[in-house]
Amino acid sequence: MNSLIRHSARCLRSVVFVAKPANVAVPGRLLCEAADTQKDLGEMVKKDKVVVFMKGTPAQPMCGFSNAVVQILRMHGVDNYAAYNVLEDQELRQGVKLFSNWPTIPQVYFNGEFVGGCDILLQMHQNGDLVDELKKLGIHSALLDSEKESK
Amino acid sequence: MFPRLLRFATPTSTRLTLTRPLMPRPPHMDPEGRRPVEQSIRTKLSESLCPDHLEVHNESHMHAVPPGSESHFRVLVVSGRFEGLSLLQRHRLVNEALREELSGRVHALAIQAKTPQQWEGNPTLAKSPPCMGGSKGDHTVEEKLKAGGGVGEGH
Image 1 (cartoon, each protein chain N blue to C red):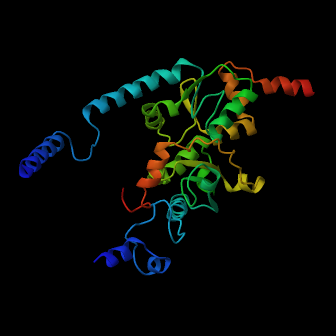
Image 2: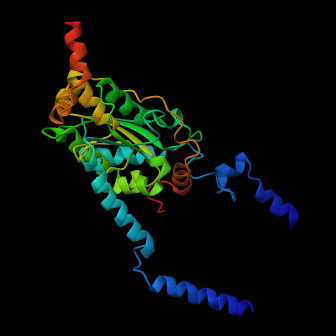
Image 3: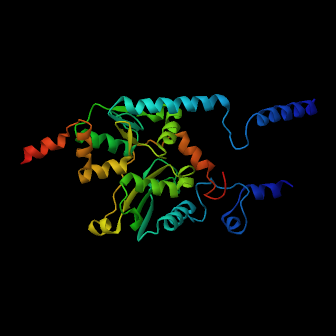
């Protein structure tokens, strides 16, 4: 009986491994899903002017770096943006890293173009580039108004 | 037979220094505090970017991960190789140099990438924002910490 079980297990293993190349560990079904995620991401990043992939939501960020992105955008008066919570969707979480060729979350897109993560957005905010980039999107930064008021 | 088994099942601190314990510590906690991931990050950034100034800070203690983890880092790289490159290009260079670490045990990497001139003008290390607990109960972080036997050990 034991030898029968061992033989069956060997057959099962051989069937699984013969069907796929040695360096690919992802079954066919998951590969298709991964391709769908990449296609969806291509559409997601273009649907809105500002797109953020983050941990948590703008109302309740679950990561200090994601929260920093939310705060910076809020400071500039950018409230109307698409935020995707990667903690709710592991496929999205891994898919966006592959799509952007960027290993960490958060990730920011402007007009379908990858901008960077928290560090880059913060530096853009500090050096004034963010105001200019938002202007290109047709978004008037709230900081410009507060600067005018202070003068 | 049983006394012999019991002796090996409960490694003592003396035994740890002499032999490999039968029940190893979790891989993310190096018993001798060698910090292999930090060392690897330092080596790879030095080799790929020839920095004038390099700082590698393990910020794992600021996050919801076990003590002794090497999962969250901040790096400051000052290099002439960043001249003429956008922020995104600079960060991609750093990410590429640390591709293995970032696909393994490193869960978060904060980057400051400056030219020597920029560093002279503002020689300050940025601070990371406070953790909001996202790593707590995050099974992918736990998996990364468990899977890593250290960079280069193969996993």
